[in-house]
Amino acid sequence: MSGFDRIASTYTLLERVVYGRDMQRARSVFLSRARPRSKILIFGEGPGQFLSQAAPHMPNAEFYILETSSKMRDLALKRIQSNPFMSSSRVIHFMSTLDEVPNGIDLVVTHFFLDMFSEPEIEQLIRAVNSKVCPGSAWWWADFRLCDGHGLGYWRSRSLLWIMYQFFGLVAGLKCRHLTRTEHLFQRNGWGKEVQRRFNLGFIEACEYHRKTPE
Ligand SMILES: C[S@@+](CC[C@H](N)C(=O)[O-])C[C@H]1O[C@@H](n2cnc3c(N)ncnc32)[C@H](O)[C@@H]1O
Image 1 (cartoon, rainbow, N blue to C red):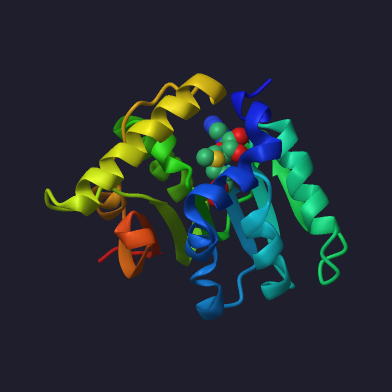
Image 2 (tube, protein in one colour):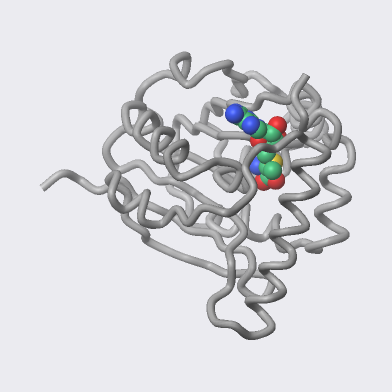
């Protein structure tokens, strides 16, 4: 059983209470500028908030999802099946390992996912993903961030991060205890930042990265 099974049913409610709609804004901010994509790889989709909003925008896409919590998977499927514009789960594939995911992925999605891992783990994941993507692919990333400076924003973000790591450690068994900055990891592994958006007084960030073509 995944630790996230324990909080699957309350995850969306908790998110709404603490952050209002800002996490969902960060998940969906790039949908309006999405190019037609055919193979989308999502890490840790959770209860399906992104999937249910994205799928109707991308009618010809196949979604490959790595999600360890069976309860989260059930909730995501239920949510998508209740969407009148996306009544079929035909194009949703839950995979057990990255090895099973086909090559030619043209969009990678990690929303509030990489914050659960250490720097070496994140770098290993990016390198493994690199072997699956095609030229011209994009990566939609969203996560929390420690605000700059030493003002109110910094202390607020630091306190919220501390509370969240305690909470997820206790309830979901999360081992990671601090947030790793990821931008340099994307940069040095062949991904350039195209667009960046911030929400919730700068505490939530969403970026679109593009796969750099080798010189
Ligand atoms: C913090 S939640 C984020 C959920 C969602 N992406 C969002 O935007 O809120 C992390 C999700 O990743 C899943 N997860 C944790 N470890 C994982 C792993 N190693 N591989 C795939 N999914 C994982 C959890 O079950 C959970 O659904």
